[in-house]
Length: 400
Image (cartoon, one colour):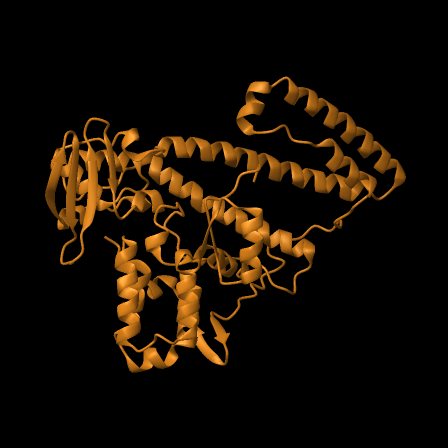
């Protein structure tokens, strides 16, 4: 990762992993996966879920709903009193870890709106459709390449759609048209902004405070707007948490008749065209790397068969490495954009000296069709819990 630390990492409640992360990535926000918390709650509080139909809603509210710590603490105490859970040991342990799972403590940390390890587990599920434990190493890489090609193809289709079309705005408002040109299709969901109520609470100089009440909701969000600097912030912290502008901020923009969201209003926002250009550079490097690896594998597979071909290939590779190093040194401008100069010599020479071979047989495109699908269920202490769409576990989550 070039010495960089992630902003946020999501894990289960593994104590050893938590200790290792604190040492390795001290500046990374460590959050607990909400999906695993629900699974543990279903085990430790099974009798409570069975007796009280309203407990699930109250428990979800403590996880998702509050923007102020005091509100969360009051709601937590009320839940314990209501369901007589003050002596529950599991809830006591969870309360000590509240800063790692309650969103009231984590909205200021960017995590692309992810609160579960859903992405990792989803990729595991996708991978199982392509590879099986029965495959040998060569078969594994063959099918893994198929998976990578398919994922890249889907990304290219999404990029093509973003570059050559814009989302259709529900209302003929300039700010919606501007957002359609900046955001991708996946994040263009602005209709909810029209369903909320806005109230101006006060003004001090150029600073204005607004209260936004979502349609048919009892809670409010506070939006602070500095017209002199063009800065705006919302108490829901959706932009800090997800990187997407919330409907509450848009409601204020509608009120102020602002048609374009300036860069300083949002911080480090990146336009669609910039994202596509950067992605194209990364994809180009990936394509080059894959093609060279394929050619290199074919070369060493054949060259390792005899001493004569081995010496010929080794001499040619060493000469080529020297030429590439000279070329890279002369392209300092390009090197500074791509990153640190790759260290090729040591890695390649060691592999040539060891005469590593991955086999000389060619595999037909359809030689292995065993997808190795696994069950979509998991077993927890004898109980069976369906592992379907994780969004079903987040019914209590606010989406305004």
